[in-house]
Image (cartoon, rainbow, N blue to C red; front, side, top):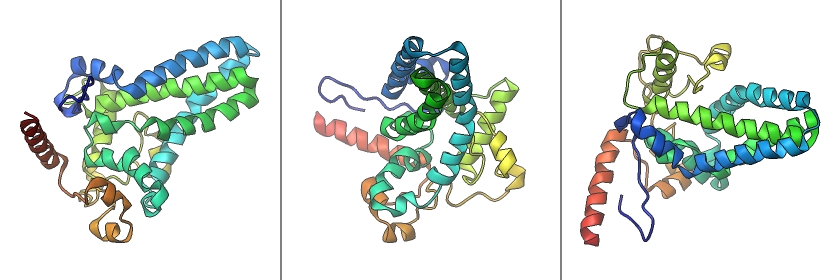
Length: 264
């Protein structure tokens, strides 16, 4: 992408990258840098406000334990729910936090939720419980741990989108399940690194379980018919685009080439 002023904003496509390229791309992303600062400052605050080591340990354990079910609930019933795009106020939120990711799954720019979409839930889920467990020390410990777990979760999320075949059995398994969620059928396999809640609630599947590919795997049900009734996502996206991600990328490259030619 072309440079603008003093800054250059680069788009990273994970399916064109390996581990070597992932590390600098991942840790140069502004949201990850903010999470790291929050983890460090949160644990520092924990040190000064902690009531006891036990209360801190329980707060940390709570944040770790609540992460997977919280993600499952948000992913299945919020991000894959249709109610967000039916409300004008939340339509752009839904577009940014998940629709864009399914439109172009390997694009690092939209793989993470924007900070305004992730930090409030992390604080609301972790800090009140941490406070009840151990006062402000527990609140800071729980929030910092939630941010740390988000970094780890998103790092493995990126690994799942890399162009490689994992040798480790666990990593191979989670990559296969997540890719099926993106490219075969979006109504299932909602976990990223933990598919236990999918198994428990009946949304875990293998390809043989669903031989027919979903027609809405890239648009999450936001079709042209839906856009006529609820136009806000389409307005923000320049219309409804039902092409496969690779087909869209050809358009991006052509547009970028045209823009660069015009600039020169």
